[in-house]
Image 1 (cartoon, one colour):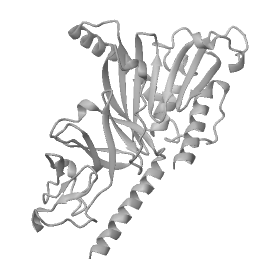
Image 2: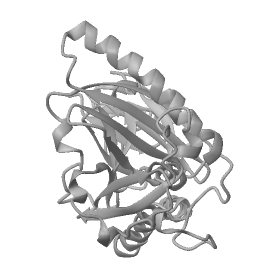
Image 3: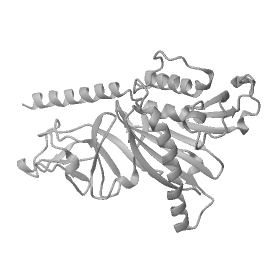
Image 4: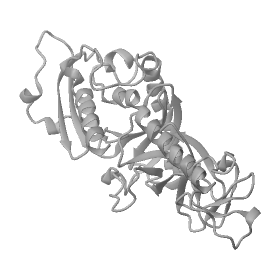
Length: 347
């Protein structure tokens, strides 16, 4: 009986591995998957991420925990249960799970009985940092690196945020923010004003898993676009950043930034968390109002993008997929190459 149950557990692990391959995730990476404020005290939350049903909760010390949202006993959703000290209790039969996904208590067999080792579900390391809940997407739980975030935003900035779901793979949503060619067409009434259709470069630089790309768009007056190598003093240009695997920053100025996290739901859906960061309005109540109002404009811009991106086929991007790309697509090309490199290395 115990052998059969353990075989089922191993099959469950295999199915999770297959799911991760299907959604095209890069393993051994920190992914921002939730806003920290979405995870309440003593109230578990169930979400789909990486094509997996996951449940998050905070233990008695406030630490974030994440396990598979399906009881190994009769398949009930653990997110409907309750937090009991450091454990998550199944709503169906009271099984209690710890942070590693192990069942520590089966009430029906008695509180002093040893729980068989096959009573467990998959777990992930999860942490709260910089206002996000992060998941370490890996089977390795030792010597985990620090969560990658934009260092300059950790002090002095305040932010307002909103989120929404898009019906595309997270790679498509990310590539939209790397696209410097679409601005005068998709955003001609907002940030794309000026008819700057000619794209020089852009210049792309990598520092580890962080890409910075420098943008120089101009009105077309018959001049030839410069290659990245021809652009002088590119560091003085407007720039944006991508932190692999799912974080993006628009460096508008020293005091204003836009940050987005693209949380992978499944093969055809992404949850986008967009933030407006600033540090020139510092009065407590006033800055909150200002940050909230600033996101109204960000929503308008994002919805201009969404109208087009949702029509792209296929919904998921790959390194090579029969497109006719141009020089202006260099940030997208570089992203795809880095993503493939990390997938080959990490997986």
